[in-house]
Length: 413
Ligand code: EZ4
Ligand code: CO
Image 1 (cartoon, rainbow, N blue to C red):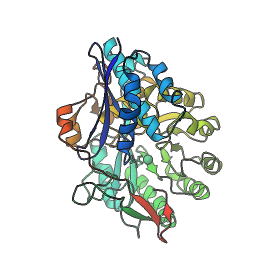
Image 2 (cartoon, rainbow, N blue to C red; image 1 turned 135 degrees about the vertical axis):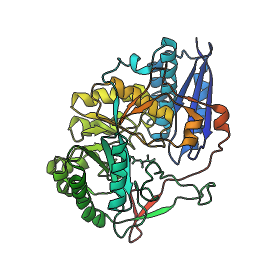
Image 3 (tube, rainbow, N blue to C red; image 1 turned 90 degrees about the horizontal axis):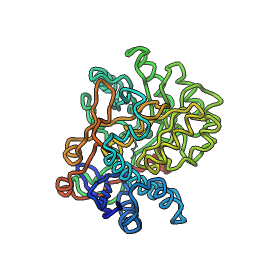
């Protein structure tokens, strides 16, 4: 049998998603996620203009060969656009193979290493009380791990903090359309002050430990905003609060920055949501500078590449913490859950529930039970796109924000 058609669709049920559909000559359909937040059409074009025709007639069973063909073949390698496109093809081919085998994908990856996947939820609030209410709400739902982000006095809207009031938990969406809901023409801009942040956050973690005790797994995301020495001091300052991890404390390109942080602190470190190949981790893993790999399956070349990356990390005692924000479609989320089930060195999985409109467009079979997700036992990934429903949501350009320091200097967002 062979690949008969390759179709790319872009839909926007509240936010944009790029989906790849591969159909074989005997009618088996595989789905892949190629969503790259704020740069969706670049990946859609890479797939439809450059990749699709090269796949027609290929043997759908040759997943490794197809991966190498798309990675090594075109000469130009790596980068988020290329690797998201390869990821979508890879996911779709694994979906097809598992459907043909009549098994959920995690069975083909070695079978279940656990009964469910522990997830962390996103608790945020513009002030401490709103944050504490959100944490309590998640605990009541059965979650055992939360990422905590809060407003910083003197700053306005910042990354990771829901603009809505207390009680609303599931609504953080950084990619912004225009105020009237139509296509944006440029990113919004936010203001940042690292000194204010560094002064404020340790007290927040202190209050959380006082109010919620030692059992709660606390995660926090620094969104690449600290210099190496700032991050080292921060990681040391928050050591008493025993975080599960500190994420993205320094800019992602600078692997050796984390040597300095490591020298000064035992706060566990996670990084990698903007990475796209194992080479972004080479120094980090071999020098044991991190504790968790944060890549998204969608942005790091798919299941084939992620399995190798996580096996490599396992040799160094490093665990998974796969990226799972709402800009990963339910297809990319399912791919993550099958890997999470199968690998030995699973750490934790990020989980931000998709909105109702998204879940009307994508049919999912994963389930949430008391803070643990399970990918379900349908053959394949267990997720599909309702193409008719998807066609009702036209692509609407949205951008991630741009970030500036108080004096106007462009800073990492
Ligand atoms: O800002 O996915 O840990 N999660 C995050 C995310 C990212 C978005 C960017 O598209 O930092 O919320
Ligand atoms: Co992050």
